[in-house]
Image: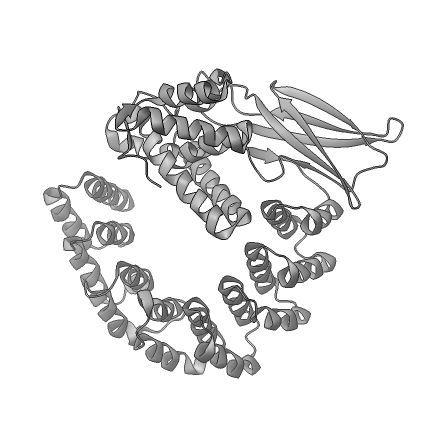
Length: 492
C-alpha cells in the first residue's frame, strides 16, 4: 500500500506522491475487502478532513514550494487531498486506463526519485490523454470547487434545468475548475444518466424529461472533491434515501433529512425503516443514532430489532440509542447483551447504556467492567468512558490506576478524558496530569498538554514551563508554548 520505498519523492513538495498514494491504496484495500460503499464513505471522510484544514487553517497547492519546515508538508493536503487526486484520476480516466497509468508509473520509476510531473508524464504516456488541465488545477493550483446548484422544472418545455455556479474565492492559486460530472435523473423506477462537463464559473444545463423528475442527483457516488449547496425538498430526500444506488448518496439524504426535517413523523418512520432494511451498514447505524437522539416511543421496538443486526456497528448504535429512553425495563435485556453479544464494541455500548439507565447500580457496573480483560482493553475503555458520563469522584483513584504506562495509550487517553473534569477539586488528578509531562509517549504528552492548558493553577504553569525548557520534540514544544500562552491570557 505504501509506495515510498519503491518510488520515492525527490523533495518535500512531492511528498504527496508517497502519502497520497499510501492513503488512497489503503482505501482501495477497503474497497477490495469491504465493498464500494465502505470505500466511498472512507473517501468522504478523507474529503472532510482535508476541507477542514483548507477552510480553517490554510490553503496551498499540493506541489507548492513555500514552507518553513518539512513537517508542514506532512499535512491533510498531502495525505487526504493527495488521495483524492488519485481517486479523481480514476474517475476521469475510468478503471482500465487508470490502472494502466498506475502500472506504467510504477514500472518506469521503480527505485527512482520522482516529482509530480513524473506521475503526469506516466499517465499521459500510458493513456494517450493530455492531462495538463487536470494536474494544473488539482496539483499545481489550490482549493476545490464549491458548487451552488439550483434546480427548476418547466411544464411548457418538459425540461429540468440545473443552474451550477462555482462559488470558490478568486485568488491567485485557486481556479475555476473543469470537471466531468454525472447527472442522474429519476422518475419512479426509471433512471437517466447524463455525462456533462462543468468548466465555467456559471453553467445552466437543460435536460428533456417525459415528466417532472422525482429526483436529480449531481455527482452520484461523490467522485469529485467538492462542497455542494443543493437544497432539495423533503419528498426528494425521502426518494433519495430509498432509491439512490450508492450508499454515500443515501447517507447524504439521511444527513439532510435529520438536519432539516428531524421532527417530522414521516421522516422518522422512513429513517426507522432504512435502519432495518438498508443494505449499507453505515446508513443503518446512522439511522439508529438519530432515533436515539429523538427517541420516539414507537421506535423502541425497531431499535430492539436492530440489536440483532448482523453488523456489530449497527448493534452497537442500536444499544446506545436504547439508553436514551432511560427505561428500567431494558436493564435485563442490556445485561443479556453484555453477557452474550459476540462483539466487544457492542458489549462496551451495553456498559455505557447500563450506567446511563441503572444509575443506582452504575458504580458496580463500572467496577465489574474495569476488572475484565479484553482485546485492546475494549471493555475497560467502555467502563472508563461510562464513568466519564457520571459524577462519581469516589472512583477517581480506581480510574487513575489505568492511566499508568502499564496500559495501552487508548486506555490512558480514556482516563485522561474521564478524570480531567475533577482537576479543580482533586489534587491527585492534577498531580497525575503533571506526571504525564515526563511520559515516554509523545501522544500521551500531547493529550495531557491539551488538558493542562485549561487548568489555571500555579503548579500547572510551573510544570509546563519546566517541560518546555527541556523538551526536544518540536511538536510537543510548540504545544507547550501554546498552552502557556493560553494560560497567560487567562491571567491578564
